[in-house]
Length: 341
Image (cartoon, rainbow, N blue to C red; front, top):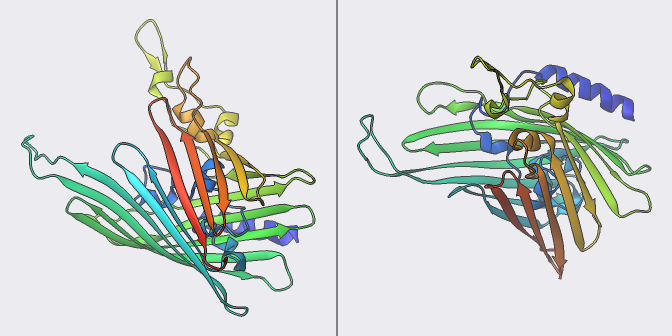
């Protein structure tokens, strides 16, 4: 069963392997974390296959009947006045149609003071992005492979400029119940701008990811390993603060080693008591930690942690993510199980 999974993984990777990383495309909010659980595990977790209705945002193949009639709402402050939130709901129609998933992602960038080309104050303005999605997953007959897709409509407004787009996510997960292993592969944000901001068509933030997780036998821990941005090998950026300056005034840019660049594709997380009413989570994002670390100072960039607490039909989740000494984020989430009395 592993062999066909790896063959499909290779095919998808070669079809979609062209470069895109942050700052090179529009609608970057599409790759933001969508729940406190995902954030606490380092972000972009693909291999959670249970009742967590939020997981359908990042890997549509994980949509399953356990999510039936659950709704989740998440909210967080990013930086300054930037706020963002997500919501998700799943409904199992019947045993033939199975489960449908709906979601929304929203970012509000706050209020800005406007100025013309001469520096004269004009009226203030705002900016926001929103995405609406519908997803569905299918279990390949007589196998443990699940495939799924999300269809997304995207709207972005920045001052008087507006853009509208469409995208799909394709996901796959293989569940090895015998060994407690989940393997996942996802291609996100395959799409285009339908209307542009000012006549220039830009690409969407396509991302290819793979993941693996395992429930450790006789220990209540599930670890998750995600490989992000597989569509581009070199994801490192030279940090001017780490440049080598010589006596004659010349500067040599920071060089990133092969191993260092490889690690920047890795996100690792672990969850304690994943199947119980109280969960503890810890994650580390290597790329975030490396890009935001300070010279000769320990600031724990890249670390994230959180917990989940179930109270009857309600589940409360919280995450804290460390970026820099001056910038950290918290995300709050509430899930309601309408099937539970």
